[in-house]
Image (cartoon, rainbow, N blue to C red; front, side, top):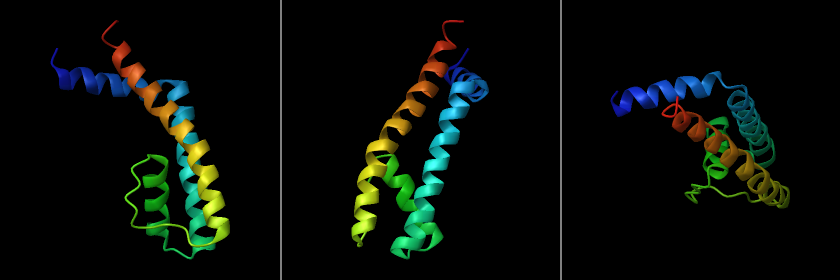
Amino acid sequence: MNSLTRITRGIGAALRDGRVKSLLAFTLGMVLWASVFYHYVEGWSWLDSIYFSVVTISTVGFGDFSPQTAAGKIFTMVYIIVGLGIFVAAATTIANTILSQDDE
């Protein structure tokens, strides 16, 4: 079986896993929650708010946006600490599920 087939099969298995679904839903919820916050508190467009939320939680952090309000800065610190843990847990669980397909 080639690598692409194994990866595709692994992703399919991961998306059927209840843990993966829960972590992905929680990650999506955090991104949406943060996006709403940035939209209303920082006054950013919806696209900019979603973009910043995803870039921040994934630790990419391009630096093209940054909160200007005290509330935005405090929220972002908490969001990074909590969000990073959730994001890493989701990515790790998906990777483990994909890799475990080779064992079966």
